[in-house]
Image (cartoon, rainbow over all chains, first blue to last red; front, top):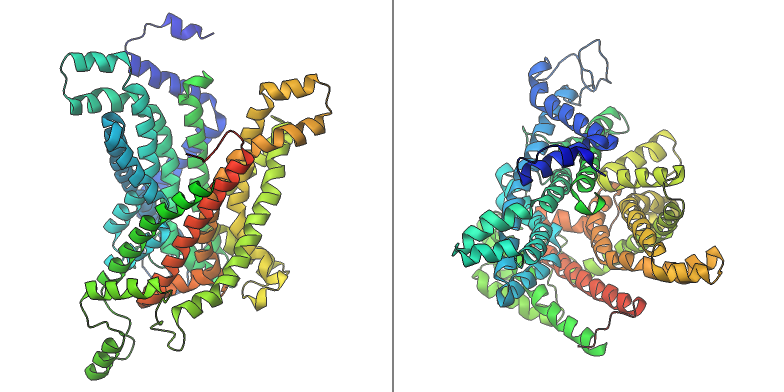
Length: 294
Length: 308
């Protein structure tokens, strides 16, 4: 069926898996479009604030609450304080995207380590560790995160940590399942027979082999994390002035929507498109990496 | 069944205990107290107030005190709404949140299930792509974006429905918040139903049913529906939890006097007892509903027995 893989000399197993997945991903139109759009949005948020003539909290005294117009240079209009909305959306995007990256990384590290250890040790420890995860699952987490934000103030580092600390549960379950299946395989037995130490087996043999589902899950975690951050910011518990994020901007826009609908529409569009693309990309990656659909 | 239920109820106790303890200490760690308002109170008055509510005692003592009262079903007085006890506030807000939630879950099932079935039956058709594309958008776009947009379009531009307020639950006031709250769940349920329906339709007993010469509607309604609904039923737990947390935002946006709105305001006001009250109440509710969902699941799936 796959002539090209048969012809090309497989240089290494890991490489060909990645290449194969990439080839399949490129055939998925929705996923590639999403990837391009995401790249554009990221680029705009990173470079945008330097390109627009306005600073984040610079007030244009000639333009309070003006609708979008290319003439005065406010392509997305201004808010009630005369600040350029597009600039603010780009800055907000920086915060939202950085939260996505850092918090996802935090959840990834906790989840992978926890799941791998539980699955590898197995037995009673596994049972206990997973029971703990079950308990965590049944907690009304949103309430605890809200409390955390209230307690420690609205600090962006804390947002990273709090969201990451909440989102690792699914990851740990997935990794544990993978590890449980992997650890009975011959190559792990061989490593054990050779006297490789446990932590080496986990880091060198188990985690790399469980990476496929983890990558897929990461792309699905990123939108969740962005969502959670915007949710908190929307409630007034997220980042603080002068920083802003998409959630903050949407919340501000909601209060002004009757007089200045663009203040709601522009940040909503950015957030919605980003989340949509991330979901498409996640679905595409899952199809590309899933060996069953090959 | 009874044994299983009792066991699960017993297991719920440590979970709730953790929730209560965590939120109690978190809340008391927070800088500021319930009585620092705009105006600085004279120190004697503040001291009196603190003594009145036992806030001058060490935290562990307050904790034991709180737990003692909780066991007797007393959630304590609210610090901000001075004339009300927390129990009264929760009792006031809950019917409102409940009405909103029931409508939202109902709407999610009523629309999500048929959409999923249709998409599965017309697999890879235009309808399928349309339904699944919309569903993905519904999954991706958060309710706090959808809600103001709905209010903008139907409330401001078209003027068909009120942009907010509760008005004793009159239906025009209900429509937008319920729709905003359920869209995400509709999307999830439709996706899940489609996937499981496709899987069930490919299984042997469906082939047998068709081979017997049963009509297609019979095959789907009598044979395929029940097993196909199982994943949706097991999703109901998270769905309900999602609707409960979603209501925090939705109640805020539409100015609905339910529990969710109390919670955020109370957390910001350091209204310790009200925050604790809502956490305890919703924690218990989620645990209970999860149990109910599991029992419903076993009732639908004869392969699952909880008799160990």
